[in-house]
Image (cartoon, rainbow, N blue to C red; front, top):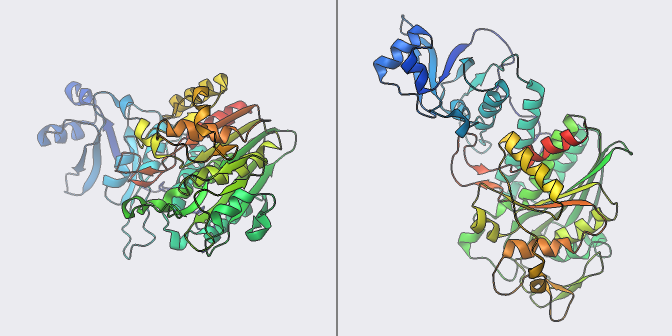
Length: 462
């Protein structure tokens, strides 16, 4: 697999110039008051076009050729800030521009770009797509880098494990590092035993060796930002095997790794003044004669012993070693992302990723960044009253508390045990998947919270 495949994708924007067809993005009020192009207005009225949110009406010329399009924004466009993503999938192939729209240039362009995403690597036939001319008052470079980061995360998650196992994820990681001239180091196989014992434990049963990937970029002395992403390329559940229905989406269990790689792309491409470090523990949780077992007890990198009460709670194990390693460098901001618990989805559903932090100021900043970028997230508590639930009978802590209550919180409390030096730490329990089509996404692998995080980091170092 070519290492640059996941970075360099065709742009959804018209970069060659030439003639383009107009799109009139309108609300019902535009039709009622007649404040749009007269020809478009006449056609809309004759066709009974109501400008409902996401609706499209093609406009012919007097000669019967395609002359443009009307696109409905509904009565309140702010309710669907990236509704223009539907344009990218509903317009016929060709070159287009927005003639009128009560939206910011950045918002309408980013929406179109997000909605243009296609994962057609395994399709025999690839259909042509519409392209959009970016308005002159839009920040074209920033829009393109955000799309590149989102598309990288989506591509990595959507790729099936036969083409995205530990070896291939490392190749993509190396390609990202090479693209931005970052330093990279890899520790793999039995070399993990001494310093990253939990990573080794989880991944040792796979034919592809477990490994710890590390990227460094930026300048010493700048704000130290460390990103940690869960890289479980496939999760059978181990000896506590999942049922078949629960394994169908387990190619996405490296969604945390995919998302921090997408975020790192944005940071590096924008040349932010940071000292960036990206750490990704990569494993496949497989079943073999040497797989770790329920009841086993292992010592972590930090020295805490962990009792294995369920081999399907493996993500927090590999994150524990990675977070302890990251924490030793005392970063200013430590962010970890993982497709960690089903409990988070029960609490907030697939589209709203929770985050955990004891830092009230950081939480407020992240919520403001979420609102600014329309990249949803929600804070859940690190409730100390549940600390008792992660205590183990025969070890310091358990990886799978009994009872099934507050699973996302107890998982976050488990991870918190491995972060002691870092002042600002936040844990994101993402789903990494869109179960159905939305205006800004066709469904499938998804980037979550990374646009908000990019905005927060960019603003913090200006």
